[in-house]
Length: 629
Image (cartoon, rainbow, N blue to C red; front, side, top):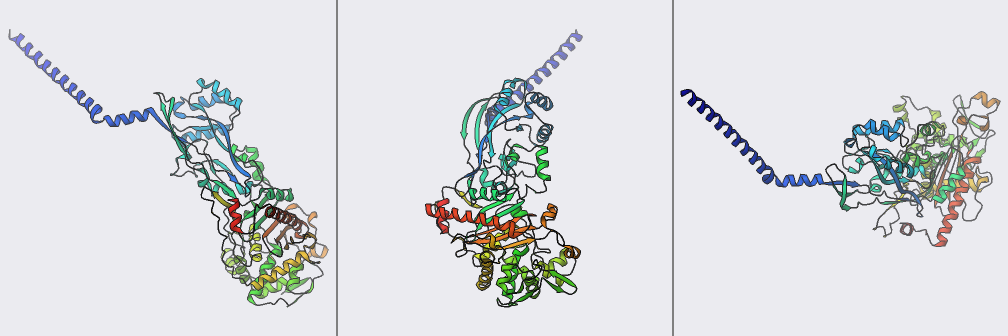
């Protein structure tokens, strides 16, 4: 009897404990349900909506690049590309293997995709290949069920319709690398997004790329897009108008031909760069689609450096084109007068060293104008010695040599105009008296770019105004209807008398018999140019070679031939344009560079006259900007 009562009590306690436990559990579940469905209702409604709605960024069209007449230099075109989303693919290697059975994938493509997958978040689509043909797109779509995580996307790619023409100024666009990524633009995460990597594409990249739009899409539980709910288009990039004239650019490139050379033509008053050609060139479209190993090797190992914009990055001894700077420095310092003469017997001596003139028999007694006209080395040896090269360097810098010009292009090199302080710091050596002589004719340590020579010539021709070159004419917006005032440049600090005398010498070079460029003159009235030839040695001529006969350029290997240079402005009576031509290892400035400059400058002036006659342009700079903005 007692035993049964004990068993009953034990069962009752256990039942009570079970009932209490169930009650506590049910209470907890009810409390949790209340918390989730009532207290956290708004939060989970929002999360549910986020799972239902996916927001996708839309790439904006990149701004166009046009020349001064509206000729398209960089446009956009459709680009079919195949993408892969790693989180939707059970195995990236399996997916790439399957895809490679359908379209061609190189080892480089696979390695790049694998690297991108590790670098980016798993839900970000990665571009596998671009510029697919319609047949390749069709094959991928047909096999879509066997390609998890693979999708076809239609975007836009950059296209340069003029190909090699103007490539060094335009630059190119390419995929965003780790070093390029910033924290403030989500567009850089998108597959197929391109940023400027060189030229104006790089300098004006932020304006050209625009702002991305958004697309709100309804997706199901597995992420498949069911429908688009809302779409907000982004802001297209701003179109960019350049100062270049592509018809003249084409003519200049044809005139340079197969030479390794550069030419710059600029407006001496506004700083507009009208022509900037560097040969040989390259096709920027190849960088957009992706270079093969062989293509890159051919470009990067070519001794004539097709990837380099020689106009701003090629540095050359200025040779005799530098003599105008020495003349101005000597006139400003008062160490010579225009009438003073120097006797040239074919050489001069400093201590035991002979410094030779290019004319073996000498020029005889020459004054300033005739020294420039005949490019007498001995005359400029003497005045460089008298004035001291530090003062020459100061004037050279003010005229734009040995310093950055400030042009709106990347990778401009400053060149070098040496001084005593520079040599002590850079070479840990003192300045020797003979170095003033050799640098005084644009040899020695002197290095300049073709653009700097064009700027120097412009500042001499425009009366000493520190004009700054530029290639961007306008960022074209709706507010560009108002004319832009003509620039007001500061002075170089050089007297008008000195500039006038040097211009008189340049006129004699091109337009008087005996001038070193007389055979390359422009004979049409009103289009005469005034210039200065230059020949820059790249090798040392020994005394033995001088005694036995100096070898001609065509007898030497290409790398040992002289550089040919010529600078000029035109028209002579009312200067408007300056030009600099440098032909690398081209030989003499008189025979090679001057005829090229003459032909280009003649074409420039003819085209300018045609513009004025047709009412498309005028000499007033404000009007010029208004009509072409």
